[in-house]
Amino acid sequence: MNSAFTGWPGVVIMVVYGLIMLGIGLITYFRNKGLHETLDEYYLGGRGLGLFVLFFTFYATQYSGNTIVGYAPTAYRIGFDWLVSITYFIVIIGAYLLFAPRLYVISKKYKFITPVDWLEKRFQSKAISILAVILMLYGLGNYILEQLVAIGLGITGLTGGTIPYQVGVVFFLVIMLIYSWLGGMRSVAYTDTMQGIALLVGVFILLIGAIIYFGGLPSAADYMQAYAPEKLGVPSGASIAKWFSLLILVGIGAAVYPHAIQRIFSAKSEKTLKRSFTWMAWAPFITSGLIFLVGIIGIGAFQGLDTGESEKLVGMMASIIATKNAFFYWAMIILFGGIIAAIVSTMDSVLLTFSSIISKDLYARYVNPGASERKKIFIGKIFGIVAVAIILYIAWHPPATLYRLTVLKFELLVQIAPAFILGLYWKGLHKGSVFAGMLVGTLFASYLTVSGINLFGVLNGLWGLMLNLVICIFGSLMFNVSLKEKENAKEVIGM
Amino acid sequence: MSKPKKEPIKNGKLWIVFGIIFILSVPWYFPKDSYQPLILGIPYWAWIIIIVSGIMSAFLTYVFKYQWQLEEEKEESDYEGDDKQ
Image (cartoon, rainbow over all chains, first blue to last red; front, side, top):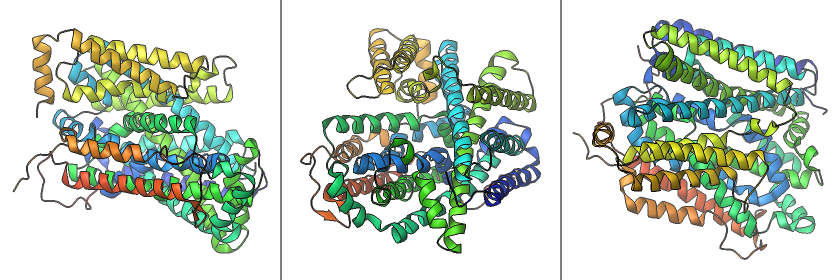
């Protein structure tokens, strides 16, 4: 791809962004000396994240680089159907209402670090905890893999190939590992803030540039009326089913993402958490909403691109806009940095959660409960790096067969939802049934995905989730919970 | 003075309202393939979906502010001090 950022400007942008992130890590490290002494401090920022930082770390975790580079082409290809990308980010916030209020209070009382801490406290079942750990580590691992590939493609694409794929990936990985190592959750949250702002500003100016130089929405509508009325029209039955299943699956699935849950634990107060969620409820309009418009404008401006070409839509638009004048040139630089940063910032959150699960749920719970907190953190960091190295290897040597195993993430992560949410309210929830539901739901969703089956246009993860829920609920109605378990549940969730 | 505790999950009315907004946020109730009138280049039904989405955000804002109150409020601003000393 020919880009306005081919050659040294592309390299300079990447290096400057990297150095800023590194700087934030260093400052955090020197300002918070006790950071590596407790799990609370390292993984949750001492449970002291304020409104602004908490909002941006939620924001950067939820919106990745893919929201920009992937969603605009989707809008380009399917037209106004893609409005769903606004609603589903709002539904995620609505889904938090199902569990965040009570979970926050309980997490403070019992000092939870990871989502598994909650399951352990509630069910006191090794089987459930270990299955949840496996699901989370596997799902998060695939998540990291996806982000790694995105960084590589993003950098190569944005700099017109000046920076080779591997160099770009390794450069940002090393930076990310260093600042995460130094500052834990605080570094991650502060860099998220910087990255989130760059992304917001960049997207906003991209839209303005697109309106000025590509004719805006009315001319795109004229084109669609003449050549592609299906992109303007009300979607048909199959699309409606997909729309509903996307809203439900993404809403619940993304709300119970382990890294999102840890952000709930990190909030300074209930008030801070509520306000961050309020901001998040409006963020879709100025993020996926603006990107949606950019994609729609593209329909008129870049007519008749095939799927592969349309994937480069944002790059093509930004390159043209950047050549117009100095203001837009710099704005597009911010956007490009923002896109890369958004990918890095999603990955750092996921990696930190990954490490915390190793530290707390495996090492501290089963291997060496007597270890110092410092040592637990150290183990988490080391295994985090090892995991990244393995994932990097997979990214460069993608498995020829069973490659679908690497796309499983949502399907797996969403399976903890019934245990997680029902457990907060239902004292009679039967742990054997919870375990069976989780296991069967996971296997079923994975089977469908791996064998490439899709039933009635409903997403595979949702089939697994429904099965899981049915087993969970009917099992609990059929089997009695022992008095002791009921007492424990009452003590933990009774408020 | 502490306010009475409120938990959104226990308030059935909230979920009925949310459910209605949710159902209306998907364009199943328009004639298939229609798009006229276009306003500012956006089909009429898309405007309605955008407005319903806005109502969903506004409703959530209301719930967060007035229907969720489990923790005792402390006398502190949540803007200051992102770092705990």
